[in-house]
Structures are given as structure tokens and as C-alpha cells.
Image 1 (cartoon, helix red, strand yellow):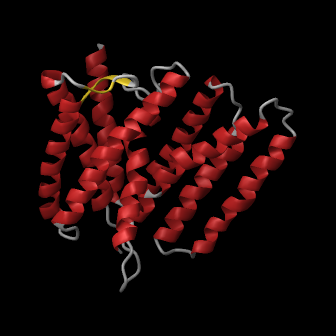
Image 2: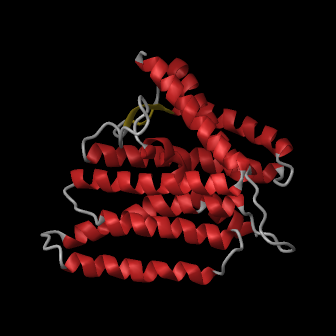
Length: 274
């Protein structure tokens, strides 16, 4: 199997797994995405070692799992918001544990451990509020449409940017970080995503056209920035891919870098208008 065939097969399996887990039920969503959260956070900590830090991986990934579970239980209406208080003793534990590690850079270790939770875990945990949108009259009901739409926007933007940029791209978007990205590609990807937003506004009737266009715009802008931020991090530690989880595609962070910044801003938008 050559590299192109490997990339194609891996890409198809990734999309099918992601879409299937979201579409089937809340439990398939929970199982797949808690695993993604665990692995992606652990992958970030592995990269941190290349930055001369020694993050506390055990407590970090345990906290990552706890955050995702607590968000799921709260968003789905199974428990109250007090469940999130468990993060406090776990965070305190990070500081106490560092006292006994005898490291020359204890706060660098703490910074990367906590950054993994802020940068990777929390955006993925916010997915729970997309699939359990709040309602005033009834208990939260599982609805995959918004999260599905966000991923469709990201994939549409990436595909459009690649196709337009490879054919018409001349003006570099951010050459210092990503030499291949161009303004032409970004504009092309954005326009194609806006078309997708119009289509989804008819497919997902609970979200009006304005909501879909705003979410698409947020996804295009912050998704592109998220890709650049991850590229900046990888360049700073001189690695090409965040990992090798997906043969031919890199690691989990390479696949979710766009949504890491997009998810918090989409959540912010819906909280702002609610």
C-alpha cells in the first residue's frame, strides 16, 4: 500500500468513526470522545517532553478524563454542576506532587500540565454542550447536529483552502509558521464553508440561517488560527507531526487542531445569545 492509499484509507476510517460515533447515540459519542480526549491530552504531554518539560502525565490525563465525564454528566442533566468541583483537589494535587519530584523547572512542568488541560481537554469537553443544547422547557436531549455541523465546516474549509490554494494561491497567509497557506486558499475555503452553512440551515431546522453562518464564520477564522497555533508549537520543538496515531496523517492533535480554538468560540457565541 503506497502513501496515498494509506492516507485515503486512514482518512475515510477517521471520518466514518467520528461521524458514526456522533450520529448513533450519546453513548457512542461519549466512548469515542472521552478516548480522544485522553489520547490527545497524553499526546500533548509527550510533545512537552521535547520542550524540556516533564508534565505530570498521570494526574494530567486523570484530570482530563474527569473533566470530560463531569461535563457529559452535567450537560446531559444526569447530575448538577457541583460535580465539576472535583477538578479543584486534582489541580491542588499537581502542585503538591511537584514538590516531591526534585525538578529544576517545577513551574515549567506545572505550566505544561495545566496547559494540556486548558488547550486540549477543555475544548473537547465543550462538545458535550453542543450535543446537549440547553432548553428552557424540557431536560437536555441528545442532538448531534451542531457538533456534526462544526466538523463539516472544518472539513469543508480545509478542502476548499487546499483546492483553491494549490491552484490560485500566491499571497502567503502566515509564511513564518505555515509556508503553504495562502490568502487565496483561505478565502476560497471560507466561501465554500458559507455555502455549506446555507445548506445545513435547511438540513438542521433547529438552527436558523444566521446561526449557521455565524458558526461557519467562527469555525473558518478560529479553525485556521488553531491550525497555525499548533504549527507554531510543533515548530518550536522541531517536530513535523504531533504523533503517529493516524498513518499518513500524523497525530490526534494534527486532526483536531482546528476545533481546539473553534469549539470555545462557538460555545461563547451560543452563551452570548441565549
